[in-house]
Amino acid sequence: MTGIYRIRNIESGRIYIGSAKTLSARLRNHLNCLRARIHRNSHLQNAWVKHGEAAFVFETIIVCAPEHLLWYEQAFMDAEIRRRGRRSLYNDSLVAGSSLGRKHTAEAKAKIGKANKGNKGSLGKKLTKEQKEAISVRMRGVSRSKGRTIPPDVRAKIAAALTGHSVSAETRLKISKAGKGRHVSDKCMAVLKARKGIKQRPMSAATKAKLSTAKQGQIPWISGRKHSEETRAKMRAAKARRRAFLAGILGERASATHEEPADVQIQQAVA
Image (cartoon, rainbow, N blue to C red):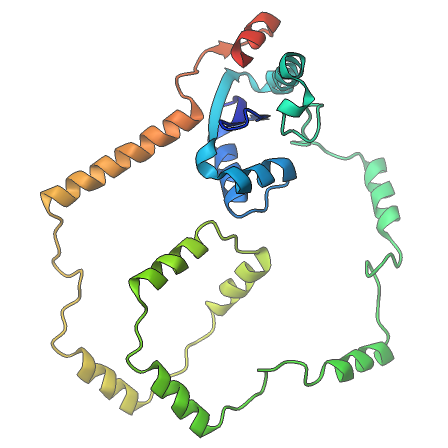
């Protein structure tokens, strides 16, 4: 669904106006960035941290043709500024614009390439053998764990401390809350993908025998399990709530299309 949306702070009344070719995808992007505290709009991010997620609602203003997105976005921002002033908007820029689908000309590409050539900071900088050796010598021994061997008595103490250790429900809840909305960087994802191809260390016959003995008589927790009718009802209700939540955020009821710009309609919609 293509159209104009706004993120409204119900406590302060300030809003963020934007346009998107796919409103649902843009919503997910905003939510993920705000929850992870990496949103590029610092004003909106700070307000999110201050007031909390419950203070914000995502609303679809209108649905329009893709070629009218920028026109409507600019018109809505102008109408909001005329009505309540500049400070009512979280938007950093007051000019609607998008780099979506933008292609640089050959001349522009040549200028960008020429400007990026040369030793500007570390960009394109090549180290000599002497510099590499100096860095290698300086970094030796810096890592506290690389190549370190743990003595047997220390290993025994660690094993004894962890034996029978269980994480409390309160601690598990804290770990779960801390992990929600966490963003995994591209570098970490690359490392994780590379590790998938690494073969695991083979287990010894003694270890296999211990595992086999420990698992004898155990029945997998999921084996033959069937949900009760009450559990199924709860699952259906939860699924319905999720659908209703997304429908309310995306404003599916605002399905009227606007093929021809009309300033009167825009002012009424903003109000």
